[in-house]
Image 1 (cartoon, rainbow, N blue to C red):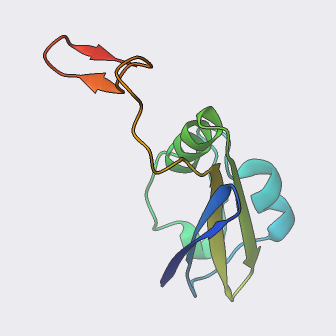
Image 2 (image 1 turned 180 degrees about the vertical axis):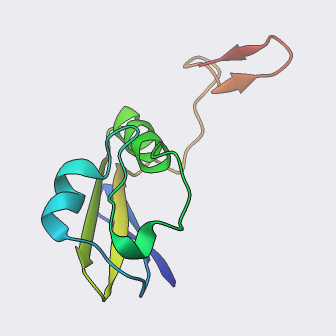
Image 3 (image 1 turned 60 degrees about the horizontal axis):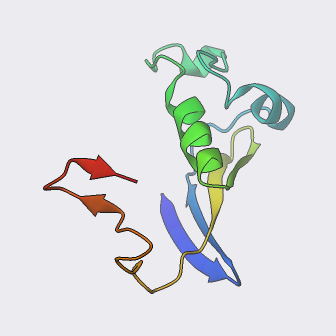
Length: 108
């Protein structure tokens, strides 16, 4: 397994690659990130899961203005990636409001 990340202008890209069983690229692109969807083949039948993990990843990434993708080849493995907007290195000022004020129980 390989994991990587890089900043590209105003975005940050993160990816995870494996050398597993892979999957049909067309099926992966159209089905994989939907809730309760699993790609079925004879080799995967012993692999458990609900089909929610990648759907949740997609929802979280998209809620932050990003996008998800997968590339795969049967028998060669898969690469899952997401891109999100980069944030500035600056913390918000008190005037703008802090992201979290634990003492007040406010999360913005």
